[in-house]
Image 1 (cartoon, rainbow over the protein chains, first blue to last red):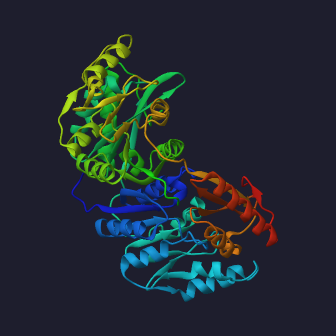
Image 2 (tube, rainbow over the protein chains, first blue to last red; image 1 turned 45 degrees about the horizontal axis):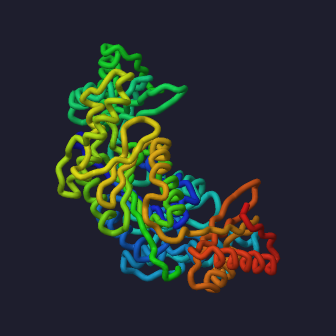
Image 3 (cartoon, one colour; image 1 turned 30 degrees about the vertical axis):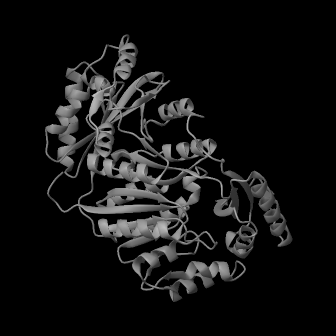
Length: 252
Length: 252
């Protein structure tokens, strides 16, 4: 890749429901795509159970390794929501009631039965935290140091990401250009390698599929220089055509 | 949980396409659910990029921490398929051409244009490996020590898992019983905590949702003793009913 400063992030997905297979995660892809637009690369994801020590260990790893660390899950009102405690432990700070979060929750629940002990849990934050607005359901996300604590429910996280757009310092977005066709990847492996080596700051991924009873592949050319991605993709399409394959820019 | 031997697994998901958000992972949930049936608990998932050192490090962590380690992705014919090299590096063994894998690929490609250099890559394995049959597309998975290298394409991995069913030593399957309703979890947090504490070997997860314009939750009671999960779920449904909520066993 190029010599521009690359901004990086790690993600900790918190939840027994992901590890048990009960819930299909959607936050990894959602956060990855959002980070791309911010010019930040997702480098690492860890999925951990609802255990304070495991969460704290993973949070410490991502926050010290990457520019930004994200978590999803475990910031709700119930006994299994322990992300705030784990992050406070990781940072070595106490958990406090965040006055602004409390005020938000008081307003939100004023017409919904009022604050109770469970709901007040959602005002807890590591000392020194700021809030991430939640346009969907009241309880805010939490931002402290280089860490961003997001909801587990994907559409709530989507709302929080929307509010964070453009707020984080990033670099050049990674651009992807896809070339694909009903082409078995195993017939063009050499050609892909040659295309990848034709430029310094480009990577090509090969993703096979089966559709309409036929084998095919999409080849994804990635670079943080849009003109390089476009040029290598065009060259690759030509190389595939020269080898007798029908290739489509944009993929299929 | 109970005092029976608990069998554990970790999963390494390999692929730039997951970290870039291009591809929605389906293997975490698929493997988690399959492991549950084998009586093995998925404890840890790591998603890593197509970099040999990162894959090797993650593989070493899961294989030394858990009873079993699984990988998905990176066992195809192209230059970005480096899982075999990374696992060989992790285990300190050379990469060899597995004769049985080569024979399988020769048969599979006999009517599909024959073996070439790219396709022969799929016969490479860490020295000492056994094969995992692939009923879908020829190229086998790989089993070595306590590691299982599966495909990235979910329906190919499904075929490999089918063949492995009942082959791995496991313990008691974890049983889940769900109780749910149009109940805001924040109104019943205390009650959930009480229900969880009513038995030693039970955990209750709370998963909120928004549907038909209403807030609701599913409460998942998990135990490796089926009768304990059933009893606590029934008690929880009664506690919710006593608190004025309509709760449904099986969830909604």
